[in-house]
Length: 252
Image 1 (cartoon, helix red, strand yellow):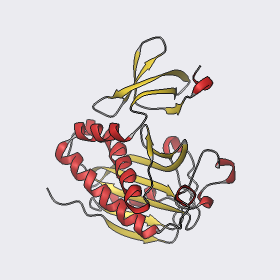
Image 2 (tube, one colour):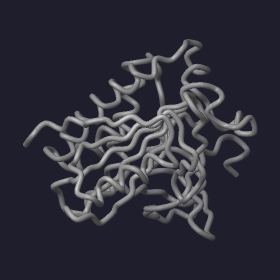
Image 3 (cartoon, helix red, strand yellow):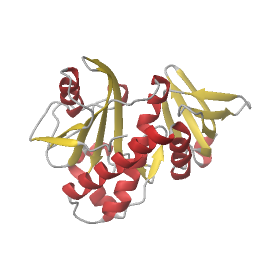
Image 4 (cartoon, one colour):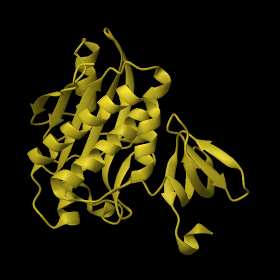
């Protein structure tokens, strides 16, 4: 298998790096073409939520993937991306992070990074556009999100070297993507589970559409779905939705 080596195109401003990467992919661009923008004017996250992306305040990165694996395994791509971000921040910034299912990177209970994987059809076959947004500075997000979001600068108390973070991210992403294709789902699930406090025995609230319930996490399925034991003792398989950590009185 050829080594995965992303080729990066830099932009000063884009509506969305995922949209730009998708445009290239739909024209037949190869796996590994990556887009980085200094700012996004219409950045988005999971569930079509807006992702604030002011100039020079964050790392806004998207890459084209064309996995040679059954489509049933593609749902693990956000998890391997979270592993890559976790490792790259430890390497480049000495920053310990947690992974909230399925793919948010947290410092404490505050969000540092979001990951968005979108499957698309292209002239060269089906592809995944993997987008990663990391808050580098405090102005990466609006003041009203201060209690829910955090930047690398705030978390470490140090000035961030964007290029250093980007280079480390590309190395880690290449490593975990190659591991995913060589070793498959089991190893990604195993490593994710060792790096996330949400994998097992975490009291959580699940919001999926109109339904909300509390429970305790009991690991992952082979496709990355979260197993949650409800307070009634039923094991539920969660493949989509929001997960909130519950503590103390909030768990009742």
